[in-house]
Image: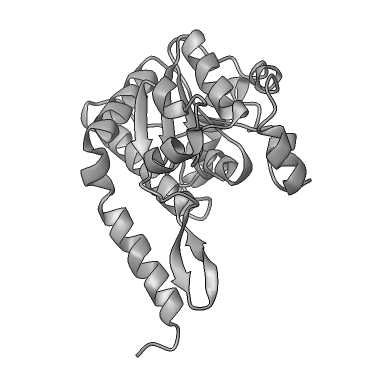
Length: 245
C-alpha cells in the first residue's frame, strides 16, 4: 500500500487519459499536423491563445527547447492570472475584449490559430476563434468536448467554430480524483493533457518537415552544444513577427 494513495490514483488516471489521446484524436492530430506543416512550409506562424490557466499552453510552446520556433503566444495581462485571477475570470467572459488583443498580432490566411479553452464557451475564446476564421487562418480548438457541451447551455462553443478540434477528454469541472469526505474532486488534468496534445502535433510536424528535406525550426535547450548559434538564427528569423521574443 502506497503512503500517498491519492497522488498515486491521480497519476495513474492522468497516465490512462494521456494513453487514450491518440485513440480519441487520431484524425484531429493528423489534420492539425498537416495544418502546422503547411504553415511552416509557407513561412507562416502558429498563434496560440487561451485565457486563465489555458494561457499557460501558449507560453508552453513559446521559445521552448525542443519546440517549434514558429509558435507565437497571444498574451494579454487582463486575461492571465498573475495580476488578478478574479478579475481575469470576469474579463474572459466580457464580450468585445479580444478584438483589441488580436490587433497586436498579424494573423493571416497562411497562419494557424490554436484557441485553448477547457470549457470552450467564454466570450474571449469564442470571439478569438471567430476572428481567426474571419482572417482566413486555420483555427484549431483545444478543448473538452464533454465539458463544453455541458457548459454551453445555448452558448457558442469553440469546438463548433474551429476547423479542427483536439479533445483533451477532460471531465466537466476538470478534476478527476475523489477525496473521502469532500464532495468536490481534486486533481485537474486539462493543462497536462493539453500540453501533451500540442507537443504531439508539433513533434509530428517537425518530423515530417525534416523527413521531406526542409529543416524544422526547432529551438535547442540553452545548455546543449551549439544551442546559441541555432537559437540566435531562429530568433532573428521570427522576432520581427513575434512581439514576445
